[in-house]
Structures are given as structure tokens and as C-alpha cells.
Length: 524
Image 1: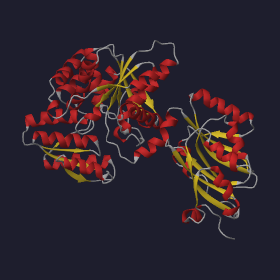
Image 2: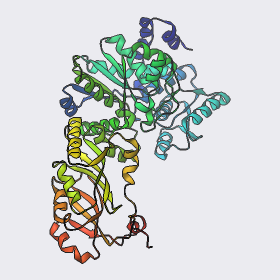
Image 3: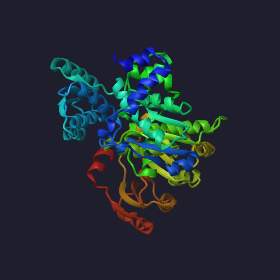
């Protein structure tokens, strides 16, 4: 155990602060890292009634704060052993931080990455000069291999977070933050292994002890919350992987020693709340954060809402750390599906309606003109239909209760699926299938204009005349929406005039192979 680590374990708070303060203030991280901006989020500030500031660590050369801790650690290594070989294990930001730091300092660096690591991340590490070794299917296997390789080859293992030098490097984020804004009330910091939170917390409490330090964790990876409850680090049986940058089962021991002294509170947030924070960052700053990068802002928003509902005085100046922007592009599809749910701006329901002409239209009328964001249905019986529907909300929980009351008074049986993870992740995409009998059916793709009343115009024109047998609609926020609809009618000519009068662009797709394979009943 080095002097800094021993200080955190055995010494008083003042002595711990003195040790870390010196390291942070004299850190050489700016030989590789840059001082990142502190941007105000004007739209979110107006919405919350508080100043919200975002520390932009996505602006680092490797798009993450991890460069700071890696360089501080490797600089110490290089000072003691100029020809040292270093090795680490990482599937993401730590790998890039070590690779760039080693290149700057002239050190030989090997990065062990799981074989499941996306090629874009492997290529990024190689481009920075790191030697990549692919091993194992998960981080734990890669990490064990890296530690074993360090011993057999005489290399120095560089831990991702549980190290006093790494912690001190991450603490330079707080040094910049307090110099950029000296009237903060609270700082929100993402927690994975705890290195960033530990380094920032000790610096903040040393310089401005009145500023609250609030750690933020995903609900499904809350290792610090579990450790604080147990009084010591504990290993979580499993963690969620959406915010993969903070998907850590056990907080670092040194980080926990600092957290229990200098972290005031811990807030946990859902994946939907993280998605909503990613959208907020994009709306305000046109920046795209990775899920772990938006974690702190999600916690800030949740904390602000909790205070709004209490009698406690509300602080006026909040800051959160945008810790990284190394996003897998495919993740954006998931984010776009979930961000409105995270803001309580959308609710999803399973509703049973009569299987008869006009039932879609009557259901939409019950919603009182509220926008439909999603509508999934497939004919399943002669008497009743089960639909999956998304509804746009402008007033959150209050409006949600109003919708439920309206459905109840109209006699509908329904389930609120807004908090049902299985429904949101899988079932919404699986609604439908083959009908129980062969239908006389024509199927069309429509291009809807996205304006209030467009869906009702469709239903008013067609819904009373033809039995709708299939309907899929999802509003993605574009100027037009794509709709798939089926009608119980033998020939296109019988309905063509109504479709032409509708005025929407459409095309017949009854002969489409995917429709024939998955949505039609087999011949007896």
C-alpha cells in the first residue's frame, strides 16, 4: 500500500485531504489532457428552475476523463522506471487513456481487451499506439489475464480505478470545476469503480466543504450504495450493462475509504432516466453522451425533483460531470425508444377493445385528443382485440392518472406497462403475429403527416367502413410517419377510392414476402 492509500485508511480527514490535495494540485495531467469547459444547460436550467452546469469531459482527446488518472499514474511509473512496460485490461475508456498516456511518455503499453469488444474500440486503442491482446469473453477474464501477464513479463499493471495515483489524476476534474464556478451548491459525479468520485470528493471537501458531493449510480449497478449499507465493499451478484462504463460489481477499496468520508449522498437512476438525460444533453448542447457519461445528469434531475417535492430549501447552482462520449452508435436506437418514458412524457398501455368496426376511432376519442406515439395490433379473435399503445404526455404523472381515469370510465380493461421492462424491451416489438384464421385482407403502407389529428383523420375516413385487421404505427419525431395497416377486404379495388380520398401517400404490400411469412395465417 502506498503512502496515499495508507493515508486514507489510517489518517484523519485533514491528513487525507493534505496528501491528495498536493497530488492533485501538482498533477502533470495537462501534458496529455486538456482543461475541459463548463457549459450551462440553459433549457434544462429553465425547466428545473436552477442553474445546471455540465463539466465536459467528453472534450478530452480520448473523449473521457479516464485519460487524467491514467496519465498521472503512468507519469509516476515513468519517473521511477523510464523503460517500464505497462499493461492494463479494459474494453473502453481506460484502455484509450492508458494507450495515449503511454505514447506521450514513451512507455510500452499492452491493453488486454475481451474478444467481445467492438472493433471500433479495438481500432481506437491501436491508433493511439497500444498493443492490443484479445482474451476472454468478459472483463473479469481479461483482467485476470492482464494481471498474470504483468507478473510473468515483469510489466506494471495499471488498475482502472482502485489506485491512489489514478484517483489523484481524476481529482483534477474538481480542481478545474471549482475554479470555473465558485458558487456551486452541489456536484453530481458518476460512480462505477469510484475513482472519479473519490478524487473529486476529497478535493471539493478540502477547498469548499459546504458543497454537497453526490454520487450517482445505475439502479442495476449500485456498488457504492451497497457498500455504504454494508459498511464495506461488497460484490454485487450481477450488474446491468446498458451504462457499461460504470457496470462494476465491486467498488474499489481505496475509493470506498474516501467515499464514506467525503461523499454526502448517493442517488440511483433507471436506464430510462439515463436515456432522458442523454436527450437533454443533445437538446441543450448538441453533444452525444455515452450512457455512463449522462449518468450524473440523470441523478441531478432526479435529486432536483425530490427536493421540489419536499419542504427543504432548493439549491440554485448544480454541476454534473459528463464523463464520456465513447458511445456505440447502435445504442442510440435504444435511447430514442426510452428517453420519453424516462421523462414521463410517454406512457405505454395494453388495452382490450372490441373487435368491431369503429373501435379504434372510439378508443382514440377516449384519449381526448392526446397524441398517439405507438399503436400495435393484429387481429386475434372475433370478439375482442388486444392493442399495445403509446400515449404522449405533457404533464407527467398527473396526466397519466387522467388517462387512466378516462379509460376506466369508458369501460376499457388495461394494463399500464410504462415501468414494465420486459414490455418495453421485447414485447412491444413482438405484438401481433398470425391471425387464427385465413383473412380476406389487403395490407398497405402509409406515409402519415405528423400533425395533431392525422391519425384521427385516417380512422374517421376508413375506420367505420372497413374492419382494421392489422395496425402498426410509431411516431419517431419526423415530419412524416410510416404506418402499416390491414383491412378485411377481398380486393384492392373495393377500398381504393377511400384510400385515394384520404390524401396520404400509400402503396399496396399484400404480396410482400415478410408479410406473407410472418403475418398471414397458414392455409388449412
